[in-house]
Image (cartoon, rainbow, N blue to C red; front, side):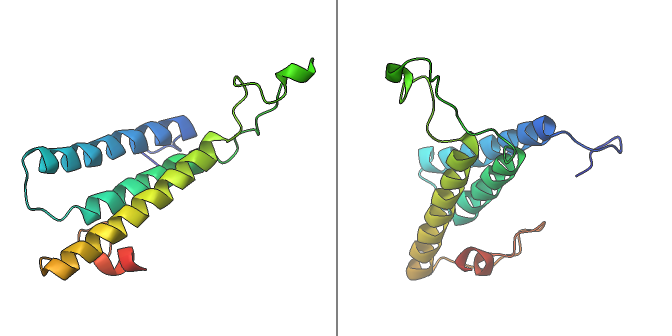
Length: 130
């Protein structure tokens, strides 16, 4: 991935951009909910999932947590996470995709679903269903 000026982006930079993008999609969902807008938000949840996948990809080289084995009581210590951030982000992405699918099905049943091309890599609700 390249940014401007043309140079390779670091994982830290990619992760920062993906987290910022995710925050805007979350803000859009909150805005729609707070204003009680009758908007389909399935595409926003789908894009949140894509952002979470991008964040996870930047963490794929993350080391597995290692407990401090100096004493037996340190094994399983709360200070040692049992799940990597990479795994947590992928789980969150799958949950976002599942929410997108539920919201899409709800809009489909309500008759308010229109397949609009959103641009970029999004292919409308056909991609969400897939």
